[in-house]
View 1 (tube, rainbow, N blue to C red):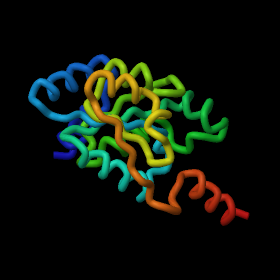
View 2 (view 1 turned 45 degrees about the vertical axis):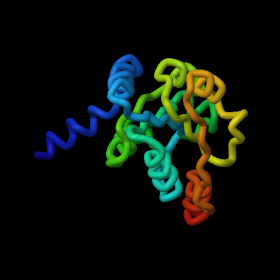
View 3 (view 1 turned 90 degrees about the horizontal axis):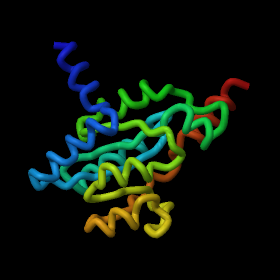
Length: 167
């Protein structure tokens, strides 16, 4: 039984080319595909709440996950804490996540343009006009939405708290 669960989990983590076929099939079935992206280094209740709300906006949720090298460029040499395969597996284990794709660029524009989701989602700290891929998704007839974060949770603050306790 455990092997079946592991296989199901790993089947959610796909290269971009394979995921495109899945997205196209879902869209042909009339399902709304939601896409969001991020680092998701130390998964916390803020992440889970955000992702659950994103999933509620459509029928299938795809997460674009920054690779380790991308995270280092964005967040610095000490990040990520968890490697990309661990982060992908943790995200894939969430029942409301249907696919995880890793990308090595700093921004997911190529992934968004290739998959062309029906709904693009980011945190409410972004304005829609500043969301990467927004104009492309809207031009394709899709929607762009923002979700308010749960206050007081971030991987950076968790890392800071751990470091303070080590002193």
